[in-house]
Length: 250
Image 1 (cartoon, rainbow, N blue to C red):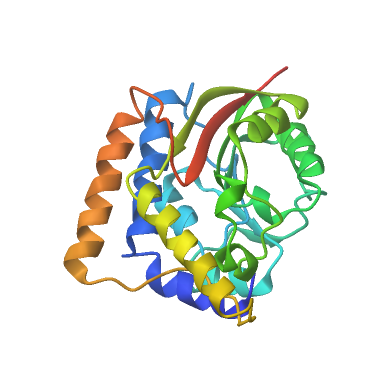
Image 2 (image 1 turned 90 degrees about the vertical axis):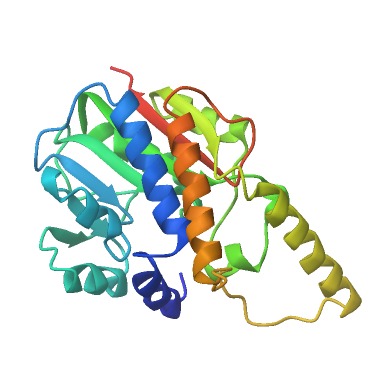
């Protein structure tokens, strides 16, 4: 990920609708579908970024792992101490040492995501779970993905296949961030049209974290809170993300 994107994330995570809405969704799914609470100190946040999830789930004493020293520095600024730098395809952890792994918008950053999933299975204890989110719909590929150094966006089928081959069985599997899906589809089509009219001229890729008026930002956060509540009882048929809680198959 471009270095300046970490600064933007660190500044926006506490208030921006996307980060806060995704957090509500994650908390809702965990509270409804996690078979049992993990043992404190046996939770791993892979690709912990600037530390939002480490701070939110501090009661579980999670270990934050990231390959970027810039990300780890921002997490440290939050006062988080349990941090390590490592490669997700060769985790520096003992086999069976974790009860729960977080991988929030991480898999798309890894070329050999199959090796990463196998490592997740290795370090999880029997009955352990993986909680993950990924960007959905390859057709929505844009400069946003380029700026964040993504390798792919996922379909339902491709994510299910990755989990199944890696030794995981989904407990919860759904689209998420559905309310904004039509608007983002329209936005991406307009982007592509503009590129076409400009002869495909290249420009520096940046993540699409558009600053919004406070009432609009609050409204979008509220909509995602409703989605979070719905996900406790049902799966959503479309959305910008896929969310899953998957159990290690012993």
